[in-house]
Amino acid sequence: MRKLNSLRRHLAAALPELARNPDALQIYADSGTIAVRDGANLGFEMRYNATLTFLDCQYAPAQIFLPVIIWLRDHQRDVLQNHQSGTEQIRFKVDPVDIHAVDLDLSLPLTEALDVLPNGSGGYDMDWRAEPPVYGLEDLADPAALLRQLWGQCYDQPPEFWAGHDAPVPDPNTDQGNA
Image (cartoon, rainbow, N blue to C red):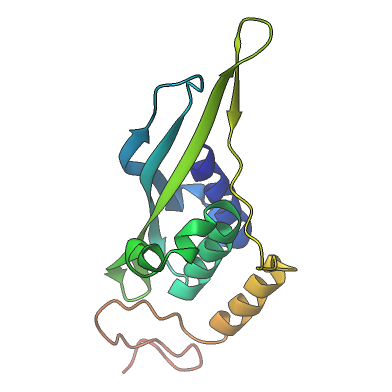
């Protein structure tokens, strides 16, 4: 699926650890449906829930959520513009692995539309439908700079995992073996 591949590439570029360890991100579609109508266009629209699982994640959640939101602005903007989608359909779950890492599941609704129309030579042309343009919103000038700024802020302090407990974070300047 094109959007899943695009999202994986975007996250690998935005999160350096994923570029080094691509197996740390599992990404797949579930709960899918196909919307199709009878007519000259034999195309269809795939509607599905994208599930992203970050394994042994040591990023702060904001470091994951922001690149996903930036990707949605370009590839599925209607999710951000629809109040219900933006507040209820983007979901996450955090499972602690240990005091330093979590498995983080993130799910969001995606669609991909394919047009299949007769061409002049007796065959058919297949074209993936572009996202509809959105007027009145400016594109981000430099999303990578925004992400670097966020990383700098997050790396200056221990990550917050929302793991359901306040785990002590060892101070690298003290003897960690003796409490």
